[in-house]
Picture: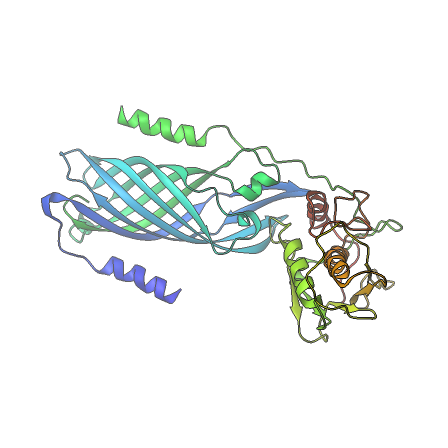
Length: 201
Length: 207
């Protein structure tokens, strides 16, 4: 965990030289909240919940035509999952989610850039047990909306505050095996500090 | 146009609302058929600690049985571990009588070449007052391979009782049938133990 934190910190502190032709990039570190992965009822209702967890993202931004640009991003979250039943929580291990997304970006106002896009999201459980005992369902389509805001004072350092919302559907082969036929919608929201690299940010 | 496309993508992902939760009904009873009492291991007592007679194939069979039962659960409801010292264990698993040789099991039709008994001793306060005790016995007149196959099935069956299934299944395709013909818990066993582990117990573990 310490090594992981050190890597994240290093990514935020280290700022490579600008990329040519106004291509840009960024690294961001923040926190993410996600809604329940599973809602079930066995005698009484229970949920499988994700803890608020650190999120690391790396992105590449295309040159801007003045208003529009494109973005590709890799986003990783390491989170704990719990079974919440009648107010009592039981730890179920940890989980990494990795998403790769492409998005279109548009400057809305000075220092404010909005983006919308889509991509694929993967779950990587710590161990194959419980809802992951038969593995995962592979890539899940994910849609995202985001906005970043760089106040004038922060812009000179390449810093921005980033808000990202994304949505995907979740199910696993083990859940299908016990009779779940539909996947569940999972909403996630992340707040992060973003450090820009190069031209477009 | 781009904005509309992004909105359409998000709407498609979020469409269709909540999934339907499958109905959960046990395939057979798990409570005490006489008193109606329910026993299961509470979360605070997990993992359940089992001391296993180190002779013969029993340690391996119990370990396999534990993993098979653990795999029945979606939400971490049960975990069991074997321990080297019986002091502090929750469950004792022993051979009662002769120890059969550890040979490959007979792949043929099941022969009922062994037996098993699980005992839960309960005090006046409706709590366990002793170890849960499992005894495995070998029946004379069968080949070593038939005994090996039988002991594997019976070990998993008795572990079902250790988990708290206090009845037998009437279905011969369940491992909790009184004369188990299969070596792993079935879907019926899974449905039963799943409901058990979300039912409030009336029998507590040893203090």
